[in-house]
Image (cartoon, rainbow, N blue to C red; front, side, top):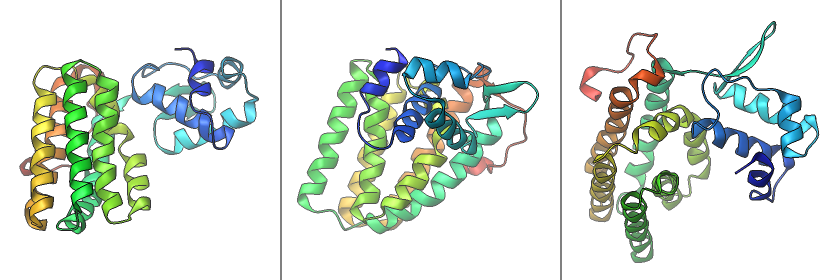
Length: 237
């Protein structure tokens, strides 16, 4: 898919928002690789837009740590660093632990069915090796938990902070067996939510996110800039 086609698929909303989503997705999925130069004028030409929405989008992406801007040498896709992964993990765990605790016991029958449908679709996507779909469905599962509580801004904060973890997930997810672990952990979270057990739900969520980080660090180590000491207690991993 070229950039112009990708942009057309994201119709709706401000143009800068569409450009932001397309370019961010390309970085997170690894289709724009660490160290690759980002040329504002070239991106604008490929997308068929002016440079203004591209400039606005790149500013937002830079604020999220996905690109590095060097005054003398240009703009480049940021490396995937251990420090960034661990910081994203800490932020995401804090927010999602609160989210899942609040959701415990609040599921309606319809909501529980929607979660079960999501898990089934997720498992099918993994079995068919549709990994982009699998990651999207994984995200939907977590977003649905926040929506049970009406915490839409919480999910937005998670979505921004987890971009670094997502880059690692795209590297790790093709590994055999990892998708099955995610499905099992999602089912455990759902069971805790249905039982109204907030403590167990938090425990399951923490284990789930720690597993994701651990797998990324182990499997994608060759692609990660391991240039910082660990900030995450070993007990969390």
